[in-house]
Image 1 (cartoon, helix red, strand yellow):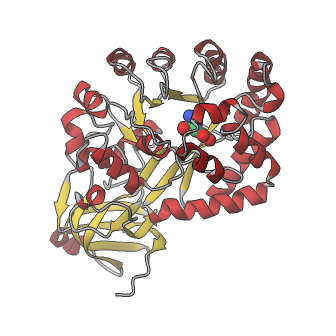
Image 2: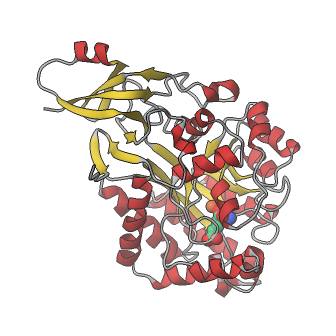
Length: 420
Ligand code: NIG
Ligand code: FE
């Protein structure tokens, strides 16, 4: 028996619509079916409709998933995360909350370089065990796909170790990881003052290895004057592009329009962060078809107040994506529901806009729009039953992870144990 009917959903939030990322007013249309249902066959969605239609269509032997009168929607797709790392930085967090800035900690060798030291010191198995633990956090938030960046190894060996951990996570057939190579995340300790020599290592050794071993689909770089200035990042990104990798950039986190223009020029899939982007940078992204990935939890967790201009971007027709940026420094959360809450209160996005930016839009940003991101016939049955009666409760009841059950390809990965 490989057929399953999902019914008794107060709302089936399908996000059915054009086969591309949604922009402007389209972001507010979730194609909700009240009292909706769906039929799954061999892990794929066969049909979506009202309960009546699905009951009539279901025949023979089939299993039933009763959603208990709750909201059912696609699994979240977290399109920007750093989910493999050694150690934590709870000590730096405490310091930062007392006034030391993220930049000051980075300048004295902490920050990313602190995690690099801890990641290098960890064995592949230790990193895998930690990443599996964090995977549980993604799942409990209702996330079924995570874009996963390397960038805490910064040597050929340690970058490959991180990327192998992601491949091993995928062997578990649990949350789906889409790996991105982030060799240009920082200049490691042993190359301080020798950025060009480090870039040579990235270009001559790391990128060829990543491509040869199929360890990543995309390449990212932290483009900032104090980290990798535009002209240095360009060397890495152009080499990656020539080698067949796609591009996603850490852009304009602290410096206005510094990297968004580069993302546009290189035709990157995404420009991520954009806290400091001006209308000029946004226009460049729009003209080049680069999708903005906004990371409000990283603004929140560094205790800053400079959130990206989401409303302006939506007005301009940019197809927004929201992600956690889960990492041990600037954003220690794997919770997409938390991101949805921040999207509402800080970015002034409606619940529908935020849900579009957390499902179908990230799927297209990752070249997966044909397979995941909405509940439509032919797509993978990646869905979540949330403890909500109305999807607008997702950003409204905050500080909880509302997933009651999470399914990937029709298989249950997580079930909340309720005692009432
Ligand atoms: O997306 N901006 C650079 N990289 C991460 C931070 C990583 C870290 O602090 O470890 C980010 O915020
Ligand atoms: Fe990041």
